[in-house]
Image 1 (cartoon, rainbow, N blue to C red):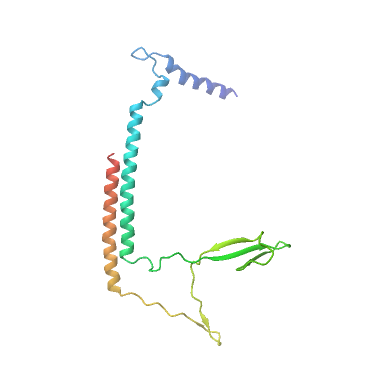
Image 2 (image 1 turned 90 degrees about the horizontal axis):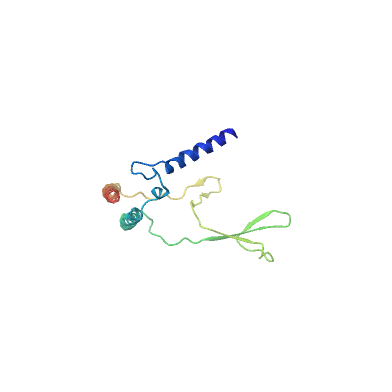
Amino acid sequence: MKYAYMLGILLLVGVGLPMILPGPGGEPIISPKSWLPDQQALENARQQGQRALQTFNATSQKSAEQFENLIKSNRLLPEKQGIEPTTEVFTWQDGEGNWHFSDSVPEGLHTSVRIHRVKPLNTVPATQVSKSGEAQQPPATQRQDKSGADKRISQLLKEVEALQEKSRTRQHVLDNL
């Protein structure tokens, strides 16, 4: 307790004394008015922030469009881009506390059934098992022509370098605001 009292006194002297002692001009060294920034500085900071935000929004929108065009032009996304169908899974708990999962709702349990919508992800085609017990692998997909892939990769690298240069330019503009 003794140290807390001494710390309080030191804090009061450290903050209060400069408000009382006169400075070179006869006014106190520190005043509450000197703690707050002037309105002009606040307005300048607000305007700079707005300009930086506008510049960032404009350049990031252009970069996003260029990136999307890059992906589409190089066929990096699969052709089928529709929304995949979802599967509904119904869950409920019976009187004994056991959880049940089904693709259909049991009769008479409509109020306590939970519905989960699941998108099919990471699916792998099933392998056929012959009567002898040996698994037959699904047919392998054909690989693309390597020369075409090399051309696309070099084109992608050039476009990535161009995007990096744009990013450096944008950062330079933001730094100079």
